Image 1 (cartoon, helix red, strand yellow):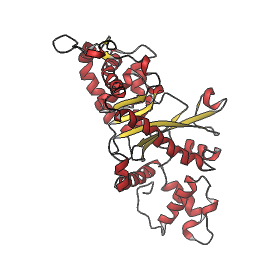
Image 2 (image 1 turned 180 degrees about the vertical axis):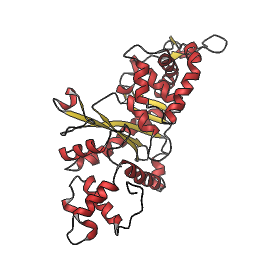
Image 3 (image 1 turned 120 degrees about the vertical axis):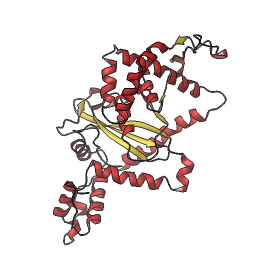
Length: 333
């Protein structure tokens, strides 16, 4: 689709698009795909198509077609139903000046960089991506990435690393119909929670009594429930970013009453996640969460295997073609 939303009289446009996608995917620039005497592959034609046809929105639309067709491949159905996804980030140093890069001495030294969040489901399809500046906590952006997927079924379970864990994040994910499933490295240090029944008792938990010592404050959830529903509606309709909400609710370590309600609500879902991880009779949940990181890593190994991947040119391109809008993508798939 043309940037001005007009029809084109250009001949052999698909060939020009394919050449551009190859040059950008391999990070080789235009020179290797230019062919003198071929109208579709001249530098002027490729530059024009690049400026007017290749952008985040069109990349996402093309990615949606690939996702839908991949889901119809018979062997893909054996891998999974697309209901489990992992969201992790790749960090890159950005050698050019851009508002999309941020400082992080731990990862970039004295330079600036960005994080590319990528959502991959259990069908090995990249269903969504988001470029964020610097190295912020992934959980502040994961929801923004999930709410704006390119295509595919909505994941029921979302796994990521432990750095994204907080009770408030569990609560917001649960309100939107996701099971937030971080990979805990220290299960023995996690707290298990119990909630009151309608009659005011907390019930008996048998062998789990020893660990279910912490009590959820359901009164905070009941008091803030109408506002919690409004927040969920605002997120689903893209009226507000999850990143901004989480920062506002956390308020630098002193959560607001609404943030406390989400944290209390999240403790219920967090406990369910921990119990599923420790289930001695059924290990399928634990195995699926353990396999998903390998799916993601298999894709990143493919990217890193390209000799030109993550060179200064590619990271500069990603930085300058992503934001200013928070959800604009660095590239398509």
